[in-house]
Length: 339
Image 1: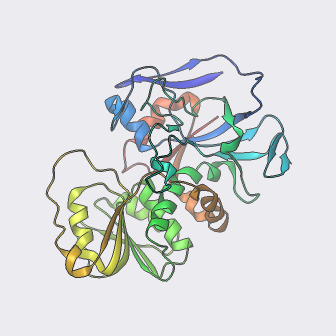
Image 2 (image 1 turned 30 degrees about the horizontal axis):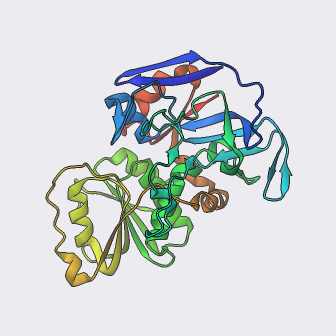
């Protein structure tokens, strides 16, 4: 059985691992992986040997955006899912609830996430031909959602979580800052969920051009044009670039909401927050997602154009080329590994 391993900075390999033929734990189910998306965190693990505070200390199989088929029957929401059912996986296992804090399990400490090096032993990911998954993490794909489309449920859920934190987008003017895969998916979700208008910004024309394939989404190249001020009810800041945050505070409408989706570097940086007072704007952080993956599947079912965020698909044997292309935003948006 083939699996990809990142051993450290600039050290990646495909090797054989022990085949999973059976298991004794009835809380888990065996699946055959069909598609895995390459995430920004996977790219950081390979380029730097770390993704934020998560440092590779032992070989790590990456991958938390996946779809596959059941290799055995399982009980699911009161019914039996037969062998061969198309599924995706919620990659999180939640950690320790802190009673005095709000119930936000996505940020509870000591949780696990597929393909994460944050803790030891590392939580091995989905870039492997077969894997055992806790039954509670399995979600059946709707009939209209293909296996390739189903592998987008996890990254789409990040944008869905941001939209929920903003109080929804229906009939609102939405700005998405940054046209990387998460930004494009967030824009596609906002369009599908009935936003009055959706605009996405970036410094590169190539990723902006891909937004037009996902719905009625306006594009704005910030190297050539200024972002309009006082125009947007909801801003989803997906770039993680500090100048973009200052721009967001100028662009947000009175009483508007800015959700910080893109991860920020852990260092001091100048940001102009002065409009937050006179606009009574809200600025809120966002991390992963909770149960939004269920809603993400409904959005994928409703708008299959979101699948156009996938620009390349490589067989597992071409894993090196897949990672190289995924690291180049001019060439790619979401790159998939297929088995």
